[in-house]
Length: 157
Image (cartoon, rainbow, N blue to C red; front, side):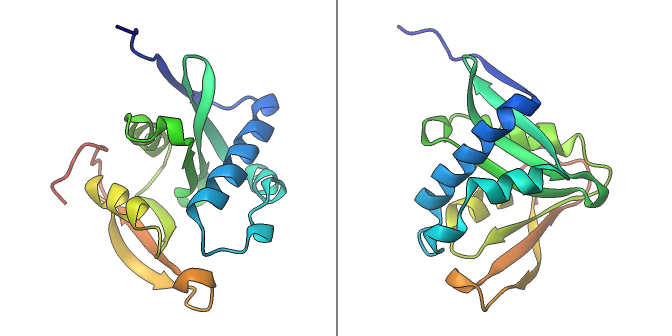
């Protein structure tokens, strides 16, 4: 029987940001099938990282996910996981870790067609507070927010 994987979450080192951006590009092209491929570029994520706090999830020392937080607005700009990390609690752990860094209610935007992500956030206490971007590919996004100290496993909201 194989040993359980060791999960560690921490602030990304500068030399790890390119790995995170490449993961964004890979996962984005896999998940956002309605978005033009040419617009899902690692370079765009690298530019966003300049203003955000980036946290990585490592399984047995390998980066399998990241989340970035724009602290002034307590806005979760991104949370991306490699396919091998999904369904293993990594996303919840990343979300919980980043939520502790926020100074107010945590908010995010999620593409309307990304129904697995919407369900993930709803199970963790987020509710839809706005929508927009109807002119974008896929019909736009929802803005979601989680008020109060609810933790990732709190399904009561």
